[in-house]
Length: 154
Image (tube, rainbow, N blue to C red; front, side, top):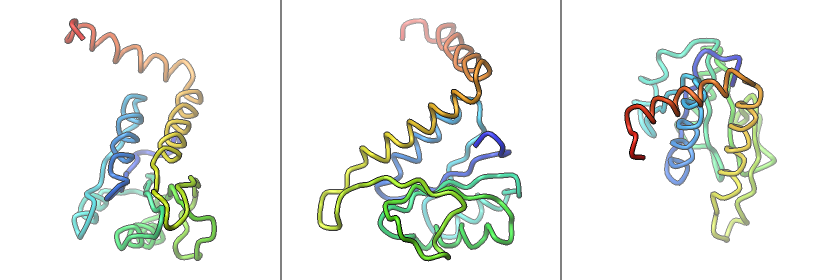
């Protein structure tokens, strides 16, 4: 996350809230993050600006979506790296991102909670902030000062 130019985030269905949370956390730390549309060919329009030094983050808990498959496939020709939040430990090679972060969400017939993926996402954001060190702290303090100047009541 710290070595890339931009972070493109693809999250659909129940994962959309996690995509929004990741977008919020990364932007607060000064990392350029872009939320891709959730479906159809619009995903490609957002990604057409992608470069080899970008990172695409996707959420693929129960199965890889059609758009997720396209993002992974396109990474091979475009050269960007991929990171996937997954709910399965055994994935076919063509469904694997460069980096996979596993979060258990329950068995197939259970309620699939987003608590573990949200905690994993927050832990990732904390790790990024820690790696940024004083630079991350300064970015957050600058944001806090701006809020205080423009929104003094809250």
